[in-house]
Image (cartoon, rainbow, N blue to C red; front, side, top):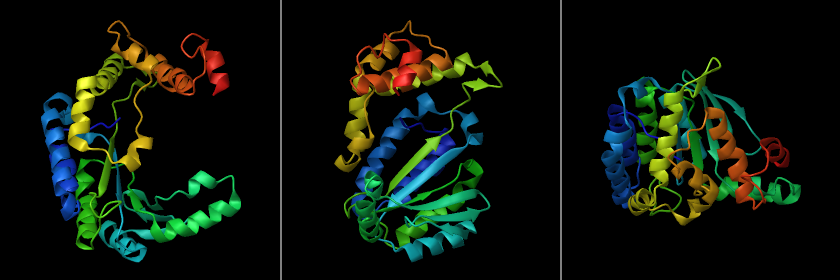
Length: 273
């Protein structure tokens, strides 16, 4: 589930960044995403989000690792802290740790050392790269924008030459529980967001606007039928703990086709997972 931010943050960050670093061939797709977010902003954005933290990930290809490292060092005042065997590079910056990752398939073969080694080598040559930024706030938008513009100027494209550079924004939600005290309003708002985005008509509108590429489908799953039934029930008013348990434990068991996912005791559900 993707959450967005305030009107100002969305315009300055999402709208501008999506278009600025999109490959020329894919600008219409970026514009479609912009249209959707613009239509939704009156419902989900509020000024308080200007002070919330957000995490941004930019996935792209067609730019060498050496050039990407140079961009990160120059635009973020970064220093290389560590180079991992997988090819991942860690940087220290005034904003926190930044990672340059290889978005390959080696992780699928971690239990097969020989296959894993071969795949790591293959990924280093051909897989897209991803820059993972640390949690930041609105005042830190400009350096991220500068990185995006520099990638664009050096020819960054998406996972193919017809796909826009992928930008993922994860926004911090208000705390559901703080200092041991539950925030019922935050729980209700979070649940209502789930309801809005899972509504069949709304889900189809999102699909029609964003056109999720087939290569990303395996990472985007619908809620399970049992969980959907729960959240669609207007009398369902869970605590933060119950919402998490239903979402994580019981829904996971249902997806794994475990009988009694919604009727067994929570202790039994936790033992299975």
